[in-house]
Length: 261
Image 1 (cartoon, helix red, strand yellow):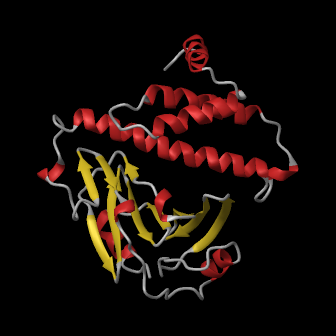
Image 2: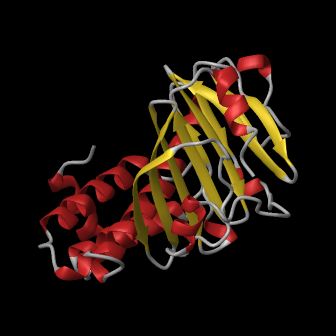
């Protein structure tokens, strides 16, 4: 990580004359436009860290409730961090893939999924999956989501109790975090709707401890695998990316995922 002194020297050399926040965002944008070989991931990490500190120091206002400016700023920073971290991981993989063992010695599912030891990258930006028909829009959960801007959702048909739902939104994306109780266990569903295809990011998963199971639901491909002692389910529908974390074994998770429609 850069020191503050090194960063100030860097800013002076570039003759940046904006506010600290403007300069940090400009530097991140410039680095992310570079090729993976030229990108300075240490500089990106420093800028993201400083932006997080600036956000934490900003006093809360009433606008932070709902979709006000303060909340929008938080989501923009979150989105930028997702993209920057993805870029940094890509650079890391470029340097290590030649000596890393690729599980099964192949990239799975036509290059959409890349699996390296216990690390998975799913290239949702390479897919145009879109379901033909949404079959569960009349459920309590689907109606609640529709009231908050999620009109078309692919959900599991399994019986569960809704514990909590939180929403965040800005011009780049809308997100819903859903906590459910399923078979006496907590289950989390994250839905992120992006505003355009060009900003749908790759998704990375660490600590993968099983093979990947692929399930087809019409035009949609659903991926299931274990992360430690819990299971992960992820899929893309149009501009929406879903992630489900559930405390089941892989076999039961596959059966659970088959009810998504």
